[in-house]
Each structure stands twice: as structure tokens, then as C-alpha cells.
Length: 165
Length: 350
Image (cartoon, rainbow over all chains, first blue to last red; front, side, top):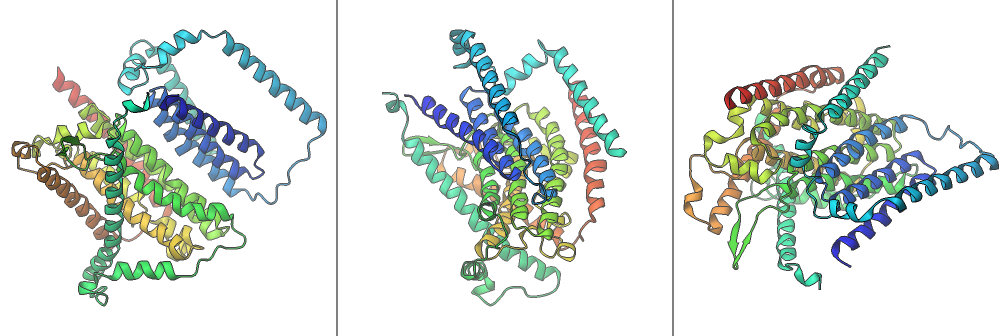
């Protein structure tokens, strides 16, 4: 096993453990903190794939901004007053079944994926570096990039309009 | 067979460098507390600490011993694990930024070229932003875990203040990035080190001003120390903390000040470049690197002094004023600065 493989297993187990802890935790604030840990583990994976820009943007945007807002809202709610709703057995069973269906679909989709080309693209690939990513985004994918920025703008305007009410 | 390919000396080299950087930051933070009191004393026509040692120089040690000896109180109603973890988080995020800063040019020792930068990653500036945006957690988790209404209010104030000022900070830096064309801090310093007139401050004075104001806000320094506003919130987010956990919070603030001084020196004031001197002509000696490192420290400490000067001169903002300055003044200014920089660059490139 090389260093990359060891790091991969450590990061994967960390991500999975934290993801399970998000669901298991009773306290929503603890769930958010575990979610932050998941983002860190995923950023580590991005680094292993040599996608440095994606890794750090994942930290800045998700761990640094969105999760802070999550915490912000959760801390203002008096958590003791909210009683954990008692769900019936049937709802729990349906939840498990749908979760299993999703897992099945994901495995089926991944097993068909062509692994060899994916490997050659990621290992030793430089597409994730800021320079290459920027060049591709502003040449080949310029139209989708601009459309998504308009989407962001409209979301911002919407947020301001709702906030003004 | 894979592990034999690794250059093991690099671990030792980096470990020593990390240890040196962390301990220097801690010592500077220690003496920054002393300097703060001396600066305050001079401005208020007092003497300041002068009992422990010559010029009160042992005062930080006495303070440290006092903090260690105090009784450690963990409130019964607090979230205990998070309560203990929060000051450590504040400390870690304060120290982590130092990893990407080029502390000097490379040194040639024992037949090896040793770079005085812990990690020369090509997303250096974004890394600094990532760490800054994580800096909120120390305050937020500490304030929430204390289970005290004043602490919680202060934590939420701190979080919204930091998020607001991060935006203007990022926008002011984009103009610098457009000029340098690299996110790598070593490249940014190398471009500036050709001479005094290559420093970014000459081309980006407005960008620096915005960055400086935002750095004040990110460090929770007066006039932006709303999270610790004594007259409204008692003691702010560290209300319930005692002993060295409180010490960590207070220390982290001074480390943040020092590191943000270093970042400002690196981005706008030529980093380890000695002004009006062509130090590259002196050759690749260890003392040249050391001199450069000293120069960077001098620049950074000047900014720390500037922070203190401002603290004892300007009164605190009101909360709505703070938000107005951040969102309605600094962000538009930073955007204008960015557009002007882009236009000028486009004009001259043609």
C-alpha cells in the first residue's frame, strides 16, 4: 500500500463514521459539527485527486460559510423545548427501504462506470489545479458558467426581497 | 519499496520549522500583551506594568502563571466536551495560517536547500481564507457551549461580523490576485522583492485599506470588538471561561493579530524583501535569509503596533454602524477597486 492508499482509507473511514454520527446524534448542533468533519474528509479526498481548488473551496463555502449559518439558526432555537417526535414503526421501515433502494441504484450506476478511463483521468491529472480549471471554465464551459452565475444572482435578489418583507 | 523513495530528512526539516514558527508566534503573542499595556499606558499618560523585571518585562510570565494557577471552572449546564474544545479550536485556527507564509528566502545548510516556508501550496491565499472562515467556530462553539445568554449573543454577533467582513476582504484581494496572477504566496513575494516600487501597496492602496479594516474586524479588535463589548455583554463569548481556557482565547487574539500583520506584510509590503537594498546580490547565505525573516517580523510588528494604536484611539462602533460599514461601504468600495484594476490592466496590456 502506498501513502495515497493509506490516506484514502483513513479519510474514507473518517467520512463514513462522521456521516453516521450526523444521523445518530440527538442534538442538531452536534450533527452540524459532525457534518463539518465530513466536509473536511471530502476535501481530503479532493486533495488526493489533485483537485486543490475544489478542496479549498469546499472548505471555504461549506465548512466556513454555510455550516456557520446552520449553526447560527440552530443556536437561536431553544432545543430543549422541541421534543423528539415519535415516529411510527411503519415510517421507520419505509425510510430503511428507500435508503436501501438509493444504495442499490448508486451501486448499480457505479458498477457500470468505466473504471480504467476514470483512473487515467484522475491519477496524475492536472485538471483540478486553479489555472487549468479556470481556463476550461472560461472557454469550453463559458455559457453554463454564466448561466449558473445568473442563477446565483437571482437567488441573491430573491433572498433580499424576502428579507425586506 | 514505496517508502524508500521518500526523502525522510524533509520530515525533520519541516518539523523543526513548524516548531520554530509556532513557538515564535507564541512568544510574540506573549509579549504583545505586554506591549499592549505599555502602549495603552503611554497613550493614557501612565506607566504601565513596571513591577516584574526591568520595564515590567516579566509581566507576561507572571500573567501566564496566574492563568495556569486559577481554578478551572466548567459550568454544570454547559456542553462539556465542546466547552473544552472551543478554546483549543480558536488557538488552532489562529496558528494554522502560518503554514503557507514564506518566512524568508531559502537557506543553504548541510548541502540542502531548505525553504523557510512550511508548505508552498499553489492555493496559498485561498488556504488563508479557508482558515479565516473556520476561525468563527472557536467563538461560536464556545459561546453556545457555555449555555449563557450573554455568551450566545456575543457568539452570534461575532459570527455575523466575521462572515460580513470576509466578503469585503476577499474582494479586496481579488485585485491583488489579478495583478500577480498567482495564488502562491512565494510567487507573490518574489514578484515584489525586485524593488520597493514593485510592492503591491503602491498599486493597491485602496485594496490595502479595505483589507486592513477587514483584518481589524476579523481579529475582533476595537473598533470592531462587538463580541466582547463589556458594557453590553459583560465579557462576551468567554464569559464563563476561567483559567488557561480563557488564556487561550485571549492568546489566540494576539496570535491572530500577529499573523494578520504577517499576511498584510506578505501580500502588500513585499514580505521578506528589504526595501532599497538588492539583497539577492549578497548571495545565498543563511544570514541573508535571517535578515529577510527579521525584516518580515519588523513589518508585521509594526502592524501589531498599528492595531494597538487604533484600539486606544478610536471608540467602538455601534452594531448597526458595523454592519453598514461592512455591507454598504466596504463591499462596494472593494468592487469598484476591482473593476478599476481590471480596466487599467486591460488598457495597458493593449
